[in-house]
Amino acid sequence: MSDQAFFAIHSSLPREGPGDRSTISWAMAFARPPADGRILDAGCGPGADIPWLVKYVPRGRVVAVDSHAPYAHQARARFRGDPRVKVIHGDMLQQSGPFNLVWAAGSLYAPGVERALPVLRRMLVPAGRIVFSDLCWTGPERPPEAVEFFSRTYPAMGDEMTLRSRVARAGMRFHVCTELSASAWEAYYAPLEKRLELLRRDVPGDPDLARQIETHEREIELWREYGDCFGYLLCVAAR
Image 1 (cartoon, helix red, strand yellow):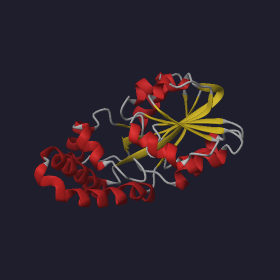
Image 2 (cartoon, rainbow, N blue to C red):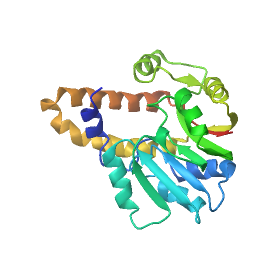
Image 3 (cartoon, rainbow, N blue to C red):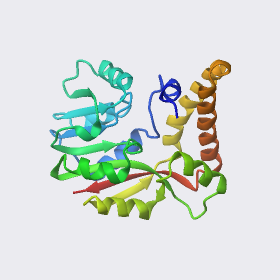
């Protein structure tokens, strides 16, 4: 996968994965960071979740980090002047705690859940929580078309039991999880579809970009057809 083609697609999008305000509200009912607590937004993207996260620590701070410089710059510009928000361009696994909450919405895909959780766990206060989402099989059926696609794009994909095992191996307690709603997916896919349509006019001169567009379009097609078989599980894990 070409980073240049990938980021050409994932440019100027409001968010970099499924999610919405109700997603954060659900998680915070279980995570309950203190009003003066510290939250790490690990893999913040352009900062879509920061406005809601900061509401839960009105006397605290949100430290948002992303390894892609344009995302970090975008988020930093958006929250410049807000003393409760600090945006860092860097590796989310190399941050200094302690944090009351680590928020990792879809961002453990790159380092892998099993590698990331033990590292993030060490950044927590004793009563801290990690909230993360991961793409999983959610139904008994696994359509061959979806299996073939995700075997190439996310070979580590499992189900809820797989996720529970990974949390346990990280030395954490699996607290609760829920499946993200269709509206959370549309909040991500609707702007992405518009972006793909816009980029199609540039396809003739860039075969790599054309392949990336086809892959993204196929992903969206699979979700619309088999969204009852797979989805993002949002999990709350405790030390």
